[in-house]
Length: 168
Image 1 (cartoon, rainbow, N blue to C red):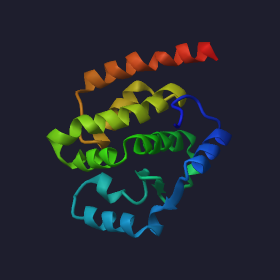
Image 2 (cartoon, one colour):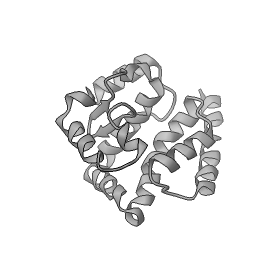
Image 3 (tube, rainbow, N blue to C red):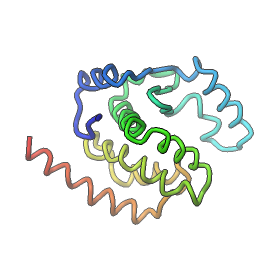
Image 4 (cartoon, rainbow, N blue to C red):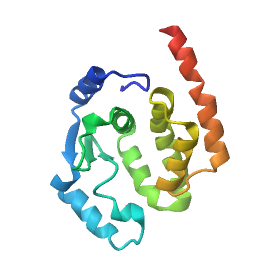
């Protein structure tokens, strides 16, 4: 299991090796190119920036924009490793629920379920403000949950960071 706690650069590298993670530039993937081509029919800024921003996790593969290495973004790599941990734990259920992402009623709880755990890592250990985490989830994941409830959840769970630090 990949820790949701703090990880050094060396621990991140070890997690990538131990979990057989492949790091693949989006431009080197026929799948990512196909998704990008399909998204060109969608008139949104996110669709236009698909190949040049953000990472995509499928199974044990992290697809990243060619203009940057995932090793440069410690917090994003840690976030993506949480998704790989979710894949390892839930397998096809995880994949199926992410496919449901495109169905507003079925997918909204699952979008919130998976992303909150990964974004909690960003909030706890990488100084992402809770408001930024909520706004990112809201905008990038199709308004999955009421903002107030997301904010309250992060406030409640981010407090655990102080408890964990005290136990070290």
